[in-house]
Length: 91
Image (cartoon, rainbow, N blue to C red; front, side, top):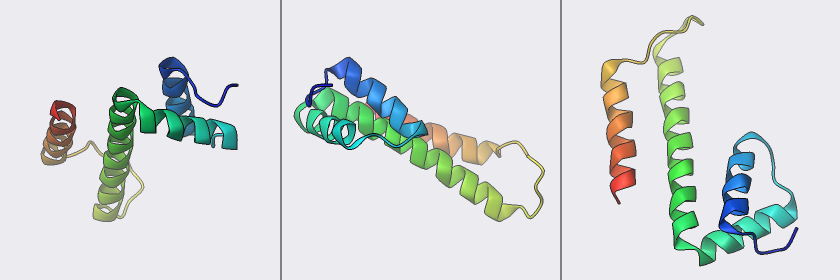
């Protein structure tokens, strides 16, 4: 793989990085591409924001309940996450 990936390759690496660790060459290539391509940088920031919002929602939900049973996400939290995502997409 070349050091500077295309936008399509960068998006594939972003997706891959959610499930597994990238190689050093992939990490460097992705960082370089995101530094130079404003569109991919914005997309990458949005992916990370959604991932972090989901993690926070899970952590908050787990801290609020002491049982292991799954419960639906409260409507207020759904609205908070939706607003956070919509706000991020509009910027």
